[in-house]
Image (cartoon, rainbow, N blue to C red; front, side, top):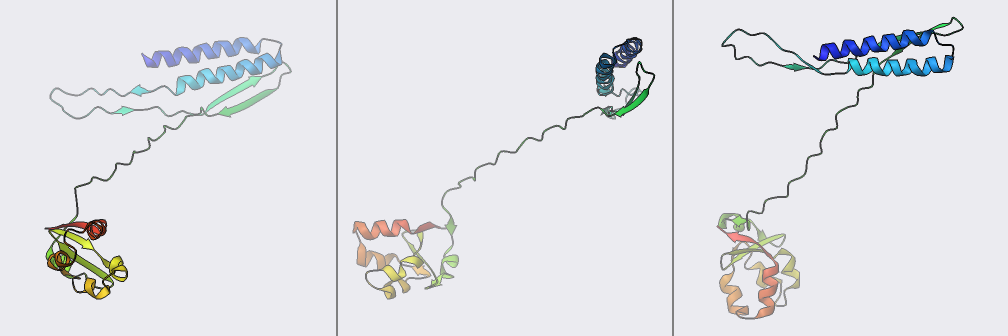
Length: 187
């Protein structure tokens, strides 16, 4: 069916073009020649499906192919007898590629640490401690501790629950400060 429509468009364009050659208005001939080129280009850019005859039981895939636009050459003879040839190629617009939407990171809850991981952070440059099953990075608080840096350095890489409870049990300000330093839970 598509094959016949392409031929009909080309025949119509050719008849239109031949009738234009007999006209006296040079400007009208050029305008209508451009229209003819558009008709021919529209016929060239249609998609066709390739149908393959297959024996019964054959399960191979049928592929779809697309005709690529071919250059079209139009020869125009003006009323003064001059002949011009204008090769043109139909314009094919590229298909836009959809932009992927980034997916937000999945929050799998608090980060978990083993005690072996906590013990590796046992210095003033990296100080982790555990208190009541939670893991805290107290490195930045070492120089700011009101009781002195030595009291924090004693619990680096260790369970600091007993030291914290002895000194600050039930006091809201130390509890709030500690909560702001929480980085995960003990596994």
